[in-house]
Length: 268
Image (spheres, one colour):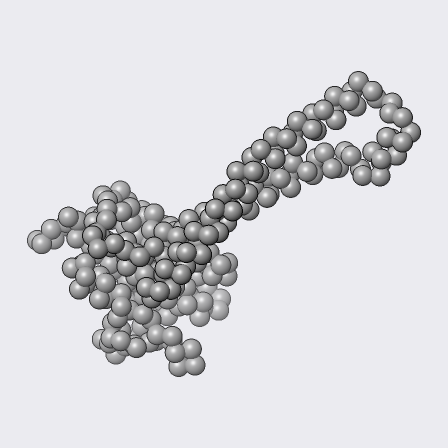
């Protein structure tokens, strides 16, 4: 995992430089195109009757259409370059190995980065509902927690994709809770897929545990998540299936289905 993370971070860094150059150049290109189109418009106003050769070229290239379509193309290219740039930034942040010391991070930014990286899996009519509350910065190993959130969200996507007719919903809620042992940041990731049988829940955090088809044999990766949250960060990782009653109504569940993973991390 460390080698893959370093490889991904290196690739992201190499792609980041040229894409930033392209994105920056698009701004100047857009300005230049506007200036040229302004000059063409002024010429047409001052010389409304062009010579035959120019008139033929205007008709051949359909100047009126080009003048309208070209700025739209430039804008689309700029949007696409920005999307690539944001994805590369997310990949770089996700893949950079953690240092020896913990770092203060914004949990919401990490989750949003993961959702952007998993956007290609969310096109299958999956609704992501984010209910973020104000959170303090968290002292943690961000790369490791990113692995936890990525694994849980990825498994939630697999779960809702087993649904045939009903709407596919994943709800991500954050809040601050207080216990005798102190204050914790609580992150709940719930889905309205099938419930997880009780016998599987008892061993779901064990290595190689899976609720998926043996043909895929990918496991849930939750034993690693448990180690990161509970053993390394001294937090809590809890499974609730079926989901709580309030989530059942919010997810339009007619039966006791769904699963919710709750991550609680101590605020230092």
